[in-house]
Amino acid sequence: MSNTIFSLIPPIVAILMVILTRRVLLSLGVGIVAAAFLLAEFQIGETLQITFEAVKGIFISDGELNTWNVYIILFLLILGIITAFISISGGSRAFGKWAMKRVKTRVGAQLVGAVLGIVIFIDDYFNALAVGQISRPITDGQKVSRAKLAYLIDSTSAPVCVISPISSWGAYIIAIIGSIFTAHQITEYTPFSAFIQMIPMNLYVWVSFAIVFLVIYRNINIGQMKLHEERAISSGQLYDPEKTIPGELKEDLPVSSTGTVGDLVWPIVALIIGTVGSMLWTGANAIEGKATILAIFENTDVSASLLYGGLIGLVVTILMYIRQVKIKEGVSGKTFSIGIIEGLKSMLPAVYILLFAWAIVDLIGQLETGKYLASIVESSQMNTAFLPVILFVIAGIMAFSTGTSWGSFGILLPIAGEIAVSTDVALLLPAMAAVLAGAVFGDHCSPISDTTILSSTGAGSNHMDHVLTQLPYAIISAAIAAVGYVLIGFTGSTIIALVTVAILLVVFYFLLGKKTQVHE
Image (cartoon, rainbow, N blue to C red; front, side):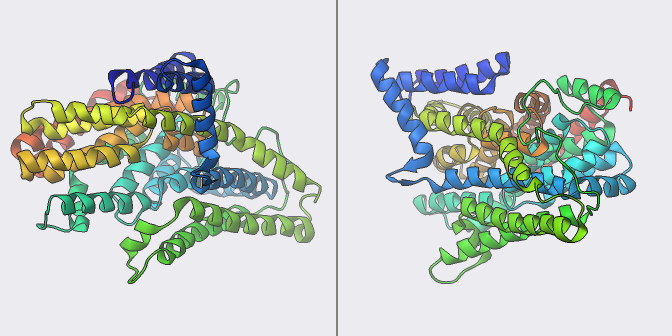
């Protein structure tokens, strides 16, 4: 069943179920069982064994602790505790009041989230969660729906990371490009210079950024996003209270009457400095010889850095809480256990979804769904001018089906390199850029993507509400980018593609602007 058309069944079943039922865990569970059933060749006992091994693999891999997954889970739980204590210390309320005096419009509140999403380019996980923590009090104060905030976070986090050479994504991609150049003896440019030249060719990223700011400025609300925004403005309900909201504190916590903006700012600053510092430290320690910035980010341990940064942020948060208890006397020390318990509980929905997503991604990998999709590209007899747009579409389908853009990079980039070198080497960089762009597009649309899950968590939005409200924007961005890739393939000019994309964005602006506005 591996590397055949049947390997598409589990992801398709899971994705269709999650869209139709809105029950994420049930849908992912069915997808997990379906994948295990195919791998076991319909043997019930073997199906149970494969399912058990997939779940076990989340925590134990090759006889050792799977530190990547465990550290990510611990970071999420720590972040939940930090959020709870920031609230108890009065930091969230004080920051909300401070922000409302300065950010007085819904446009301004949304701009804060979008700009922060682009500025924090080190890692997509960290971006999604940190931007959510900072932006949520501001957007809440201006009655911006959580679904809209999740869209702003998700549509800036992965896109900015995929074009930033100084990021966990950039380092990973440059390393793959290096192996492709070595395999094909390409010396015309270095992997780093190739990456830099590919940045303007990553059309989906630039279209996504542009549409984010057009959506904010023009108040463009497509499909279900309009319902969420209308409810937020008319009733003040930022999300459907009957749905599960990952990262949202379940109880009204006691709040210090003497809290200040610093009670929120300093824990977040400590979290950012601690995480970035840890990335530099773990990366430098993993290098033998000269340590360059690029080499450091290529070798950094992202999950460990998130955990270390989270612990540093937690220590500062607890110190700020103790200050409120002992010095300011704004809150009782008895709230300590409440903060721990409620903080952990707030992150459990996100952890559950992430665990199920990791399990199904592992099984889909064993089914070699990505390799099957890639083989379609290799075996097709196509006009090479269509190579960029076809790779863009295939990468999107692969990332959507597997829930991982990184996995799509690893499989499709070498294939794109091989096809381009053997047919038209002038298309090498556009073909690889199309793979990067398509993988981010598929990641944006996939309910089983960890980046999408964490964007929902950071914004405090119901996961499926985020997926379904972001989908129209992602599809429109992809359609515009696809036109650009067709032009790159036929003309070889990135400039012509970018100009055409800009014209299509103007059409989008005027076509959908007035029709989709919500009256404030």
